[in-house]
Image (cartoon, rainbow, N blue to C red; front, side):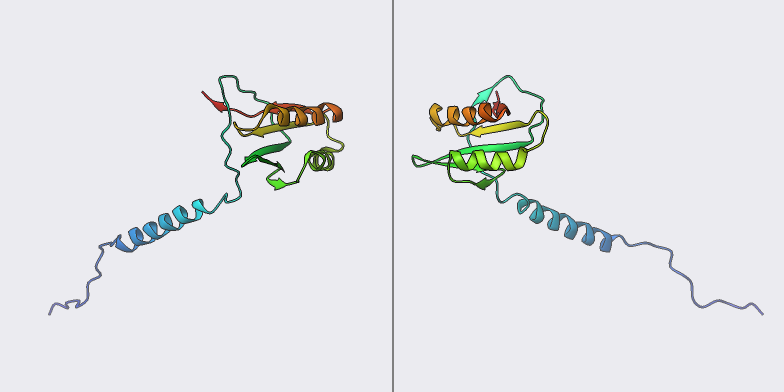
Length: 134
C-alpha cells in the first residue's frame, strides 16, 4: 500500500512585496533630497571659462536685496563689511594660506566686491571669485 503525502511545498516566489518596498524607498529619497539644502542663497554668478581648482576654506557671499547689500560668511548673515572681517578672522585664525571664495551676485556693484578684496588683502587671505561655467 502506497503512502501519499498530502501537502506539497510551493516553491514559487512572489516579488510584489519587494517592488512595493522599493517604490516606498524611492519616494522617501525623492522627498528627502528636496529638503537637504534649504538654506542656500540664490545668486546669479557671472560667467567665466577659467576655473580654479584651489579649495576654499570659507565663503563670503554678497546678495543685492533691492539696493541693500547683505553679507554672508558660510551662509550666516554678518551684517556689514566689519562683520565679514570679524567672521573671517574667527574662522581662519591660525590657518596656513587661508583661501576665501567670494560669491557675488551679478547685480552687486564693483565697489562692494572691492571692499571684500581689501579685507582679504589686509588680513593676508587668498581670494577667489566664484563664477558659473560658460
